[in-house]
Amino acid sequence: MDRGHGRLLIVDDDQLNRDTLIDCLQPRGFDMRASANGDEALALIDQQRFDALLLDITMPGMDGFEVLRRVRAKHPATRLQIIMLTGSDERRHVVDALRLGANDYIVKPFDLSVVLARIRTQLSLKKSVDRIVALERDMERKNEQLAQANRELQRAYRETKADLESAARVQRALLPTSLPDAANVSFAWLYKPCDELAGDSINVFRLDDDHVGMYLLDVSGHGVRAALLSVAITRLLLPLPQRESLVQRINGSGVLEPTPPSAVAEELNRRFQLDPQTYQFFTIFYGVLNTHTRELRYICAGQAGPVHVPSRGGPVELNNPSIAIGLVPDPGYGDSVLQLDAHDRVYVYSDGLDESRNERQELFGARRVSSALYEARDAELEESLRRAFQAAETWSNHPLDDDVSAVALEIGES
Image (cartoon, rainbow, N blue to C red):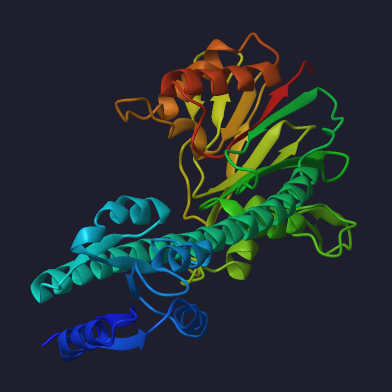
């Protein structure tokens, strides 16, 4: 036996018709109400919710057409099904009833199987429409939620973008604004972050009358974490009068002198041991050039060694790196020494340059970097860096994927 199929209102002035329909439908699970006239029916419809109305056409006083008109003024055919009850001699009225908004009709005397089938069909259609309406409302609600979430994401994106741009400006402010005025030595640098925030950092600065310091560091990864670590390291590598500087120290005679590169690397390694949660570490080239003797003392902690382009002969890759900063507690760093002559050049670059790849996933490689720098030996120092960057981008056939930075020096005439 069917249960809970819907609430029905029978409107018919004939008691026998009402009783017949109730006796047929109520045992089959329909919630039945009955009315003998149109006024009473309209009052019931205003007070209660019905799924279907079985409405007699011919009634004294307000006939079925008028009831139909008034109901349809408030309740569309998709929300309240109206099945007209008509005598066999009244079929001519069916077209008028359907035109006024009736959903179906049943002819008297009733064939109860037909009555049941038509009611079930109309209620099934109503349930389908109800489900569609509910889905549309749910979709509208979810669309509004998505729209609101999108507005919040856009706002968060704008705020985050503004913060990142501010942080990027701070980071760019730590790049060299001017290069040291050293007799018979020129310097150049180039910096291309792949994102607004980068893990690369470079600087060239005077340490005293005879010494210039220069470094290139590359923090693993990209984005905010890499940039924050890069900024923290950069502040420690600024010469005095900073509150604290790793690149200068007081010797036994009380004189301020450059810190040897290996000692700088050791102190950085002590302070920035690898965090197992973030797994961040960094590589660094740090060199101190004696502008009087032309001796370059340097350390390559995880960083590829410099490229020496002498005034005569081909390029030399001085690639003997030590362990990157933070990976082991006591790596035993030691200084390397390079004696330079007039017109010699020294280049240091981050791995974003030599590790750029082409469509076949082939590396540009250190040898191609050296060749590009050597081929540009007659160009200005900064232009030679730019040509090396362009050679890597041409090889990759797209902008470089990683942060790329480079710093260079050239010895002038005696």
